[in-house]
Each structure stands twice: as structure tokens, then as C-alpha cells.
Length: 393
Image (cartoon, rainbow, N blue to C red; front, side, top):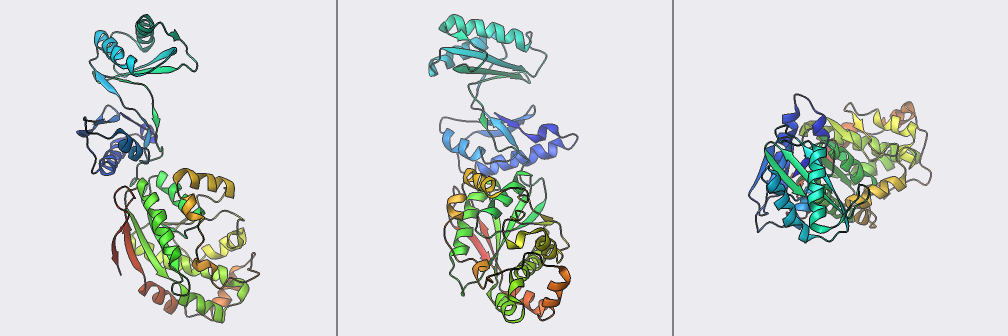
């Protein structure tokens, strides 16, 4: 039994969000044994069978946005005798010295209200087991949910991922580096219902292919939350060499980032993405000072979302650990930003200064060169496949 998160707050368009969540659950459970997934009275019900893998189904459900919590439940008739018989069947499965009944009555047809139901069933369990009733921190909680003429019994609620279902928040393109921050930024946007596509800039053959492989490994983890990820690989070395040859050393990082945004916007427009996403955290590195963020952002007309802008490094690292990307992100690699980095990068650039430096560069030609070498891949989550599905120019 799946309970919704923010979907419950929606109005006339609630059904649209429910449909997305329903489709996402069916997609996530592909290849697993179960009978059906159905919408029922503001919930989703997955009917299991003897071949169902509780562990694998639970693991996949935990990564689906839009779910507040879920439970493995027994269904019984909406009658007191059936409820008591159901509890009698469940009780031998657990050991407890104290308990409480937690009833929810979602239909007014049942003759007892929730409080009366708690008292009647509590007395029955106490008679059967001699266990004490305890409202605070009991050993066992028996959940009773009566809704739509059906009754469900369960022992615990497992937390879901919360947020909004994938696909309900539009499409965005995330600049992903393989470091700690950008995967967390992507996760934050997915939790708001966005379908996140990715763009990665690499300097191969001037650097190794490690950064590209790291990003693929990270996306196999992030794809658990949206089931498939589109990754654009952009060769960046030639563009960097031009910047090194003609621009002041102190402005290299700012110029790199401005070109990345230009290229990302071109890819986003082609893919019909409505915004760009970065892992910027204010003041964390030279390119993320307020002055440099302003200068860098000036080249883009699409909105740029920075979901980590107010987080410090420890907060970002904690989320990375929770979602499983941290151990991969900290592996050493040669990313494009480590190539030709000046000893003293500018931290307080201004737009006039940077645009003057760019006059020495053939911007359209450099953009076209980078985009002409771009490739696109589809990456599935690890539980579907560890391989890239496809690559295309």
C-alpha cells in the first residue's frame, strides 16, 4: 500500500500527478513478480503473489519520488470478526511486550469511529497476548486502515522518497562534472518532479577518460530515481586551448564556464529542456563567487537553477552519501576543469572585462567545433543494466 506525498495537496489536477506516479511505479517494477498495480481511494496498491521479492520491490519503491511511505499489508473484510481474525494471524509473526492500535477510517460506512476501533481491537489483542497497551514507543504498532469498503492491516510504514513524481516538473539539463555537488543538484531537481538530462564536458585526449566513466557510474545511481538518463558528452579541450592562447590567465575559469553555459543552452534548446541546472554553492570555489556567477550567467537566456546555492560542503556531502554517489564522486580523475587552471583565478570579474577578453575568440566557430563532436547516450539504473543503452552522434 503506497501513500502519496505532495500529491495529496493538489486540486483538480491531482489525477494527472497520480497517473504519473502510477506509470513510474509500473516502470520501476519491470521484470519483478507481482499481480497488479492499481489506483485506489487516493493510494496505490500493488497486489503481490508468492513469487514476489519483498526486498527488491521495497528497494525500488524507496527511490520513486511522490511516495510519502508504503507498507506491506494484509487485506481483510471490513468487519470486526475479520479484523480480529487478521490480527490473530499477524500476532505470532512478531515478539512484543507492549503495543498500540493505530486506526484510520477512510469511509463512514463502518459502524465504529477510529477511537472506538482502537479500543475494541486493543482490548482484543490485550486479551490474546496479555501485552500492555502503550501510546508512546510501544514494541509493536498495529495499523488498521479502512477505506472504500476494504480493510488493510500492517505493522510498519517504510519511508518513501517524498517530493513529486518524475515527469511532472518539466525537463531540465544539468551540467554534471563527476564531482560531489552536481549529482546532488540533479537529485534535488528530480525530487521536484523534473526529468533531468545531463551534459558533461571532457578534455579527452588531453586528459584520461576517467571523468567520463565516473559520470556514467554516477548516472547509473541517479537513474534509479527516473529510470533512464540522457547524457550528452562534449569535447572541450580544443576550446580550452584557444582560451589559454588568447585570454588572460586569471579569466580562464570564468571563460570556461561561460562557454559551457553557451553550449549547454544550445543542447537544452535542441532537447526542449526549459532550464539549466548547476551544482554551484555560493563562495565554494573561485567560479562561484557572487560576482563570477553574475558574469558567467550573463551568456544564458534560459533560467539557471542552483539548488545547492545556500548549502555548505558538509550538507552537500551528507546528501551525496545518502543517495549513494559520494564514494564514486571522490575518486580521483582528470576532469576538464583541472586542465590549464591558472594559479590565481579571478574571483571578482565584471562583464565588461570578460567580454573584452572574448573579443579575441571566434565564439561561433568554437561553439560549433564543440557541438560537432558531441555524443548522446542513454544510461539505465544499475538494477536494469550496467551498460549504456545507446550512443549517437
